[in-house]
Length: 293
Length: 268
Image 1: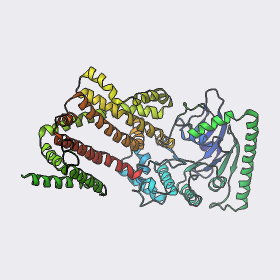
Image 2: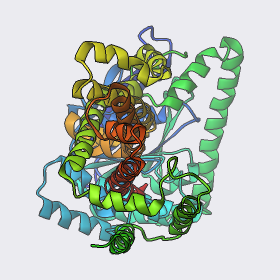
Image 3: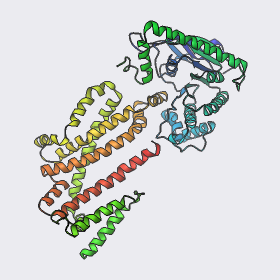
Image 4: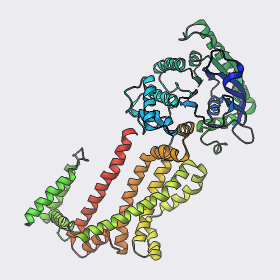
């Protein structure tokens, strides 16, 4: 895991990933998306809302399949969920009937790790996210920020190489989210794991990432890949930070205008049906909600 | 033992039954005691003739002698077992159908309207047919109880399945849970609060159906016992049997469903 990362030894590689939601190839979500994610790199993915960034993350996770192209992890194609790729969810994805410790243990339990060992490992990660002593609380007793800490501990407990974060800070109040972002920065530094964050929060994207991937509006293409060379911890008032924020905002506004023009040209019907699909979630039922009812 | 002593014993015993540790809140005792007192007074002072309503104390006396009788207890056990088997059968049929309806939209559209149609029919209207096929016996009773239990279980479990957040399915997939463990460790606990309310309703419905069948078909059981005693004028015995059923219903409700629900309350 050297610091010098060449283009050839990407940890995760997206190679011309395209996604259509329907067999007729009309509902086009992703168009030939290609970029690499280096070992230990923190990559943020931003894009206009509804552009398919979450779909992209789900494809990386193996929760969804690309219609063409492929995602490679350690050089091999991703064909489904992988032991070494873990995920943090927007609404935390905790099981309310399990206490904090049992939630963190879940991944290890699925990997059939013996009870004693998974308990020890989970305790260790709970300690890492600052939840030592909360083992026996239930999710409903915790604040949003604490719940997401449980989500992060669960994702880390399976000792993944890649941690995917799907809008992981969006459902948390801003101050708590900021504290959590700082902690995630520390965890990234400590563990050297590869992180991929999908977010609509541009400051968050810049603050955390080594590299920000800006996607276009639907069908999403890579509009720009922007390395972030600022020192950590990052100062949001630093001129480079401010400029970068402005640049990305400009790119996204441009995309938004393109979308509006397209709306007028093509009518909103297609986009509407895509929104319906996204609202229902595309992964759990990939076949059933294809077209509007 | 004198009648007076029996009465005193009866009263103290009911006291201890109801003072079970599951009742942390005793406020409900007041209206209940008031109800029994009013009952006792209006019968004792002839407001209501005793051949229409026996006194509460005389019912209690008969109740305590009845529950020492083996045949009486066997009748209750008989009805209760029919109910339990009926519920288990109804549950076993409703559960997979409800999962399918809750998770597969097409299945739901195909079958739920049909199930609603059957549900709209009064359950007892199937009874003559069942008696024709199976005779007035346990088979008919068990099937009727399962029919009565089916609908509340079906609709609550279907609703519960629909309400499982999609994200939780992603969680099970990400952590590579197998089909069986997704079911036992995610779906089942996720729907359990819904399932428990369904079961509780099913239990209430099934009791009603069981008693109704026993009265209607004169098949053996506590319902038939109540009917026989009340029509022949032994009102005390009839009321004692009703009291016994009420006790069984309450104890099962508290002990079984109560503990299931308190588990769910911990986290839901």
